[in-house]
Length: 212
Image (tube, rainbow, N blue to C red; front, side):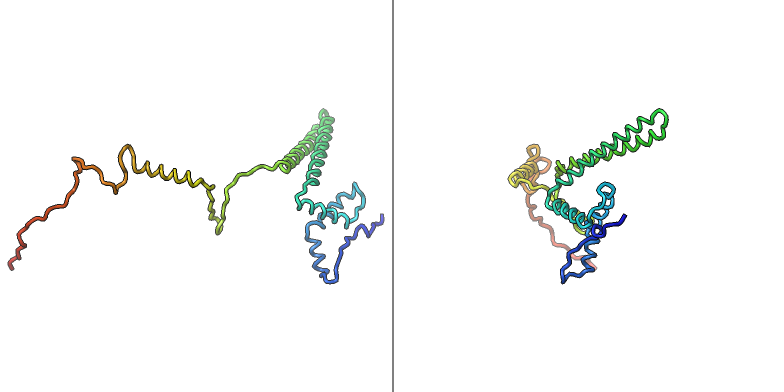
């Protein structure tokens, strides 16, 4: 079977000022062309020969729509894959039941394949559910400084409530069980601790010199 060289050739638009080597390198490493060619190879059994240039163009258009926030094609792919995986599960389970009485080894193999398909189908549906209804995550802002240092910002508080709380804390500190805790305040004298007054001057005889 002769290959169609036109379908096998990736056509690139070059301008006079473009560097050919740089353009070819960008195409090879952009993540689109390589995957388009790989996808084309695996689609060959179903769709025969596909044009490489058109495959790259189609994947670029899909990528552009995703960048713009349109996930319709991705959702379609996931729904289709979930349906296909469910079909694989049912077929493998059917074959397992046919071999259950006489060929336990084949039965075990088919059941293992069936359960793998079921697991992948469930994971695909869960992924689709997350895309359709993304979870809401509540988190605090954090600044990471110099490696492992982390500073967490507390949520803003009402300034009026904060002042009231501080005033209440001050009142509690100054008045505890009817007594003041302020060490600067003057307290009433008691028998155990009377009010201290200035000591009067004591008249003492002059200090005598020691005889030699």
